[in-house]
Structure formats: C-alpha cells, structure tokens
Image (cartoon, rainbow over all chains, first blue to last red):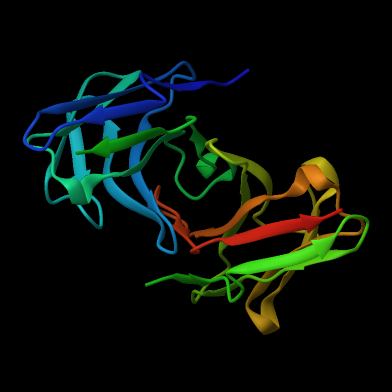
Length: 116
Length: 113
C-alpha cells in the first residue's frame, strides 16, 4: 500500500521559532509537493520538487523554504514562524510521468500547525 | 492557464438521497481530471480520474463522474449517500506535460440522518 507520512499531526509553535515539517514517501516517487490548506481557499501550492536537491516555487512560497536531500524525504521549513502561517499543511507525491495516469497525487494525513 | 471551479461551497443532503457535485474547468485541450475526497482531519484520497475513453468513470466508494466536453464539466455523482460520505470534495485538473494539477476550492458535503 502506498504511503505518505508526515512527522506530526499537530504542532504548536511560538512566533519567531524555526519550524521543520517532514514528509516521507515509500513509493519511489520523483515528485513531491507541499500545500497549505485554509478554509475557503482550498489547496495552495507552496513548493514542488521533481528530483533530489531540485525545487520550484509554487503559488505562495514567501516565508517558506524546502529541502530535499533524499528522494523519499521532502522537508518544509518556516524560517521564522508567524501567526499567519497557522494552517493545515499537506504533503503529496506523484510519479514523474507527465500527463499520464500516474499524475495522480498521494497525500499524507496533514500537519495542523498553530503559531502563537 | 487552466482553472477549476466548484460552484457549491456547501451541499446538504439527506442520507439515502442522490448526490451531484459540480466541477467546471477551463483548459484548451483534453484535460486530465480528478476527484479527491478529504475526510475530517485527514489528507486527500483519490476517488476517480479521467484521461480518455469512456466519459463515464467509476470510482471507489460507489462514486462516478461524467466528463462532458461541451460543458467543460466533470460532475461527481452518487445514487445513494451514506452518512460516512460527509467530507470535503476536491476537483482537480492536470494538463499534459505538467506535474502540477490545479485544484478547485472544494465542496463540503453535509449528510443529514
């Protein structure tokens, strides 16, 4: 069974802290994604990675960075957390075959981050 | 650029009633279309997908969707809703050559007993 895991389901941090959100997939997928989900706004892409050490900015990269040192792991970093980064964060992965049946994404359970 | 519209933010149905969730897309060529479901506190799970061929697609949990090119729609249906279907539903569209789908804003399904 395919699996995407995220390091924490719930996280509470203070303003100004550096926050790491970890995501691991066991499907040997090339593509990995970080989304932010807020009520009424749907899913917004923060960053995308198509290979180790490769990354592309999504729609809302400001205030975030990412790291992909190994194929199976994709980390989202909040350099200095702020209250407006309180949100649900979803990680996803997909196969590299562009435009084909494997474009479907597999999602982790999400991390609900609260910044106080 | 492609876009996806889910015109209904909330839908309320009674258990046992039929369901149709609407999805309209904007894209020039034949898109790749997906429906995902998100149960409370969970990640998204793929319900079904369409790439080509038969325009009526069967998915998991008794859901189906129909691709109508003339209406640029990919509506999700279920003949009889169960209380466990209460969730958030997302339509997404992908295009050939891109790894990044575009998601609609979601429709929240409420099921009354």
